Structures are given as structure tokens and as C-alpha cells.
Image (cartoon, rainbow, N blue to C red; front, top):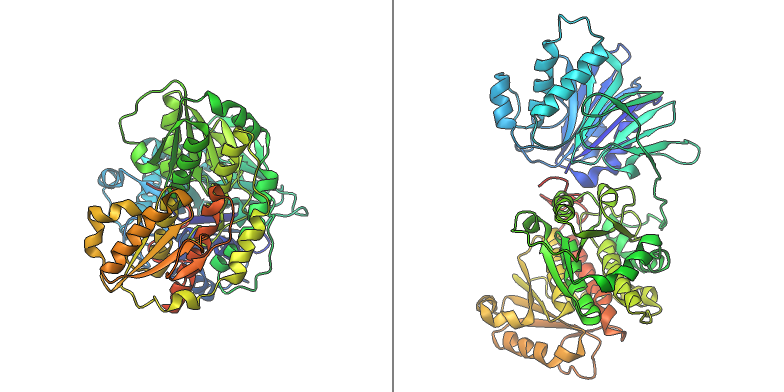
Amino acid sequence: MCGIYGCVGTKNAVASAIAGLQKLEYRGYDSAGIAYINGKNKIEIVKALGNVENLKNQVNEKVFSRLSIAHTRWATHGKTTIENCHPHFSENFVLVHNGIIENFEELKNEINEKTYSETDSEIIVKLIEKIYKNFSNNSMENDKKILFSIKKATEKMKGSWAVILLCKNNPKKMFVFKNKSPLILATNNKESIVASDINAINGDEKSKFKYFNLNDFNIAEISENNIKIYDKNLKKIKLKEIKKQCEIINLNNNYKHKMIKEINEIPFAICETKKRIKNKDFKKLISQMPSFSQITIVGCGTAYHAGLYGKYIFEKYLGVNVNVELASEYRYKTQIKNENELVIAISQSGETADTLAAIEIAKKKGAKTAVITNVCSSTITRMCDYVILTHAGTEVAVAATKSYITQILALYLLAYKTINKRISKNIGQVAKTIIDLYDYNFFKSFEKMQKFFFIGRLCDSASAQEASLKLKEIAYVHSEGYPAGELKHGTLSLVDDNSLVVAIITQKSVLEKTLNAVHEVRARGAKVIVLSQFDNEIKNENLFKLPKANEDIMPLFSILPLQLFAYNFSLSKGLNPDMPKNLAKSVTVE
């Protein structure tokens, strides 16, 4: 979960790399580093702990350079230190790496050389160096020596990697290779750029960039006016051009944090998704939905919670058995083959490592596959039989907000369209009303609580789990989300007068049952907030009133005040909600 960026041919490669790195900071912000070719064709390296701004303050962005590589880190191997910060180097090479080398200890023993860091990434550069030196007496051109060294190294490596490599003996080229970690190439025959995310590339209509996804075990040799692509056998190949997704949401940036900006974009994201989701794959999948005897939904974190809503809505209207699996568990569990199964992956980035692996397994066992994702150029869109794009616009804050709501909306639309049921109108307007009327003072008095519990039944249970996750992610408080009926089976022992219990009640059929749980926690001293549209039926409660709407879409609305609560709670503790500690936006490693 690191961000890597490289550029060659740019008038000022250092400034370009820093700008690109700032757009990738959501992928890692423990430390950052840059390597560039200076005016004397020498490689210079600068590293800094903390965010990209710290690196920027140490770098002379006006230094002459036409080639640079940069990295923002989310630590996997080794603590956050300058030694562990990228770029990593050997005698002849410098590289930046995103991923995990699973057999790095074995390779370290094979190299049998002293290392300066605790990272697996240093092992890659040392391994390439060792192989490269074996060609020292060979008359082969230097470019070919580098390519063969990369090929031999990747044949020994296990795990995931996206790597940009520089060689001091060839200061005008980057060498790029990947496996299971995203990497985008862009070129306009004047400059070439490599990045973990297409949105980090400053390309517009004037730049006339062409974009390409590098495939697993491809190697790219990149100069300012040319990109050569090789397969794992170093045979030249061509890649299919991809399109950069247009940014459909461009609200002003007069917000303190990306998270609150993205919450305010939710009404527009809802309207855009509702309007634009009706592509060929969406229509084709609707026609096929009644034919599946089983549906499995896989996802991680927030996407998993969206899947729980999918189970509710599909079983209610399609009458089909639906399993919801954590992708990290699905990939290792015993697989039971079902010839007529649909596996739906949910992933905001389309690059979530566990979810990609789950889809790969699903395809091997013969299931049809679909994905609900926000990124049209992502790896998972090339894997699945059906691609359902949400249109939330770029989401940068680590805590998912608008992407979660558009995932819920996509599942709702899929179920309703399958049975030709009328779609609710003005969904975006209802969401805007909640955001506009939100009053943090309603929640503020509960900040002093030490324990937080969110409860609900049916699809409200999914909302409870998602609300709890948001609070844990950005406010760093202990929180649990539970089906309300499970309280009596253990969790009630934790409830006392230091507890806040938030009860979500948007489904009329279980209103009384959930209120029973409310009475039980209050009897143990807990403070209670109820989120519901049933204000006439709920008396004498601390009620946050939700607008009245179709019960099936209430999960789009009930989560909104709880996202805002988590955001404001984070601010009250002096935290940065956009970049919570130990977390990153795009989880590209297992």
C-alpha cells in the first residue's frame, strides 16, 4: 500500500514527481523519498519521515532533472525510519517498490550481503545488482543486461511488486516491472510517466497522453519518447490503450479535509451513479440475475458491509441464496463448486489484493464474476465478466464515505431493475437534506463516553457495523457494531454507564424488537441515541430523525449522520481524519 511515481522527459522531473506523490499520499504517508538524475547525470536521493510536505521542504524542486522516481510509504517490513524509507539502492541501481516480497528472507540469504534496512524492497535491488554483475564480462548491450537481470530476479521473487528501477549506467531510462500491484504507464512521445494510480498523472487534453495498464510479469523500458513492453520471456508485446476516467465531481476545495469534501459530494455521486450506471454490462447482468441459483458477495472492510446490504436486498426480492464473504477468508476456505453461481466483488479501488485473489479463485471454479467498483481502469475490471461502475468520483480520504453509499445504491438498483420495480426518486436530494440539517451538537455531549456500540437488525445491522468501523478508523476509539439481537449473547456484559449505544431503526418490521435492545442497554446505564424515521412510534428517546423514504434505501441515509459524527469526533481529538494512523486507502498487499 505504497505510492510510486516516475517521470522521464519532463522539463522539471523533481517538481513533477513531488506533485504526483502528493496525489498518491493516500496510499502511504509514513515517509517519502525521491531519486533523480541531476545535471551531471548522477543519481541523487532525498528521504524524509512523515508526509510528502516534509520531503518537499528538503528538495530543491528547481534542480535540473529530466528523470525522477519517488515513493510514499506505508510500512510493511521495518519501522518508519530513514533507512527503511524508499528509494533503495545498490552500487548501480536505485528503485522504488510497492508490494510485499514473501520470500525476502530466503533471497537475503542467497545474496549473502550486508543490508542497511529492514525492508524486503532493499533485497530486490541487491538481487538485481548481483545478477547484473554476472553479466560484467558480457558484450551484451547495457539495456539488455538490465532486462535480463530483472527477468532473472523476478523468477526468484514470490509475492507482489510494482517497481521502478534506475541504473546509473543508463541515466535516461526507467525500467518498470510488476506482479499483482497496480501500475499505469502514460506517454505522449515527449515525456513518459509511471504511477500507482492514473489520477496521479497530470494529463489533460493538451498533453495528449496515451495510458496503459502494465500486466503481471511485464517489463517496460521507458525513455522520454518511447515505451518498449516485454513479456516475462523478454519478447516484445503491445498493450491495449485505456481511457482515463473523467472527473465528474469538481466541487470547490474550500474544505478543511478531503473527507468532509467527499461527504458533501454524496448527493451528486448518488445522482451520477443512478443516471450513468446503465451500461451494457449492467443491463446484461440484470437479464442474467434470475438464472443464478446462488450469489456470493466478496469484499473487505467497508465493501464487505455493503455486501451485507446486498444479501438483504437480493434475498428479499430475488429469492436466491446469498453468501457474503470476507475476501481474505474466501481465498483460503474450502471451495464448494456450484455450476450456477455468481460471485460479485465489491472494491472501491479495484486493486484490493484479497478481493483480486478471491475473483481469481471464483473464475477457476467456474463461477460467473461481476465487480462493483469506482475505478474503470483498475485491475479487477479486466478480470470480471460484468463490470458495474459506480460514479462517485475520485475518493482520496482513507475512510470510505461516498464510495460506500454508491456501492449500496448499485446493489439496490441491481435488485430493483432485475424485478422491474420502480426506483425511488430524489435520493440525492434526501441525502443533501440530511447533510444540510446535521447538527454536531446533537452528538457532541457523548464524546466523553469510553465505549461505543452500534446496533440494528436486518440491513440496519450492516449500517451499524459500517458506522462502528468509521469511528474506529478516524477517531481511534473502541467501538463495536452488532446485530441488535446479539447483545444478549455476550456483548451486554460490556455495557455500563460509560457506554454510548447508537440504535439504527429504519425497518418497520423489527422496530419493536430493536427497541427491546434499547431498553436493555439503558437498564445497564448506557446512554442511547436512536436514528430512525419512525418518530411517531418512538417516544421518549434521544432521536435523530431521518427523513421518511422507502425502507430499502434507508441504509443510504442512516449512515450519513454517523459518518459526520466520526469526522467531527476525529477533529475534536485533534486528529487528521483523512490520514488515520496505520491505515492506507488502497490495500494492495495481503
